[in-house]
Image (tube, rainbow, N blue to C red; front, side, top):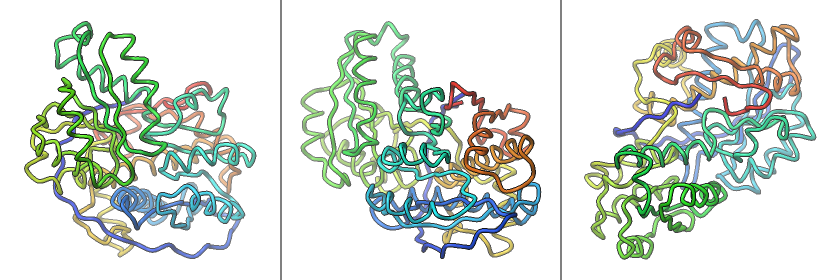
Length: 386
C-alpha cells in the first residue's frame, strides 16, 4: 500500500561525508554495500537518504546488538550519481561476503545493475523509483520497487489533479505539462503520462530539463506560451528550486505546480524562498523528528556520537526520514528471512525471500516506532511494490 500526502518543507542544509574502508566479512555479520553520493549536484538527497539509512542500521546494532545477534555492517562507494561509477562500485563491492541487498537510490545505476544482481542473486531495492514492470516478481524476482513505482506515482498525481478539478471526468480537455529531469529517472514516466492522457482525455506536453537543471528559462517560456492548467515537476536536486524561481519569473502560478516524490524535500523549496509558497508535492513518508524511531535515533545513535549527519538540524528531514524508512524495510526483510533460514548471516537469495514476504501492517509499523511516518507495506511474490 502506498501513502501519499502533501509536503510543505522547512529549512535544512546539506552535509558532506566520506566513504569508509571495505570491512572484512565475519560469520555473524550481514553486509550492506552502499553506492552513495555525497558530492555533486545531488548531494543533498544522497547525504540525507544514506545518512538516515546508516543511522537506522546503527540503531539496530547499538540498541539490539544487531538482528538476532547478527551485526549489520556496510561500506560506502562514492558514485556522484553517475551510472559508470555506480557499476564500478558494484563490481568492487560485490566481492564482499554476506551482501544483503543493494540500495543505490539511482534509476540509472539500478537499470545497469538488473542483469548483474539477477545473476548474482542479491536483491536490488529501488524505493520510490525504478522500472514499473519490475513490480512483477514473477518476471523480476530480485528487484523490489518498494512503496511507490512510477505508475503509482503518476496515477496518484493525476488523481490529485482530478480531485482539485472536481472529479476524474473533469480531466477531459485539460492541459498538463510534465517538466522532467533529463536522466533515466526523469524519463521513466513519459509513456505512463501518455497512456493516462489518452485514457482520461487530457493533453500532455512533456518537456526535458538537461542535467543538472540549473538553467530553465527556455523551458518555462515554452510553458508560459502553452498555458497549461497544471505543471508536474519531476525534478531532482538543483532543478527543483530553479524550477520554482523560474516559474515565478515568467508568471506561472506556483500553486498549479505539483511536485513528484523526488521534488518534495526541504532542499527543494528553501533555496527558492518566497517562490515556493503555494507549492505542493507528494511523498511516501512524512518529515519531522517527533516520531518515536527518530527520537530513539537521536537518543541512542547521536547520543553515542555515532550519528551520520554532520548537520543535526537535518534529522527528521524528508530525505533523512526516507533513509530511516528504507532501513526499516531492509532490516525487517532480514528479520523475516532469519525466521525461515536461521539467525545467521544470510545469502542474498535468502534475503530476497524475506523481502518477498515483507508484510508490515499499521500495528507493526507502530511497534517499530514509525506510526504516521509511513503507513504499511504488503509485498508478495507477484507484487514487489507492496
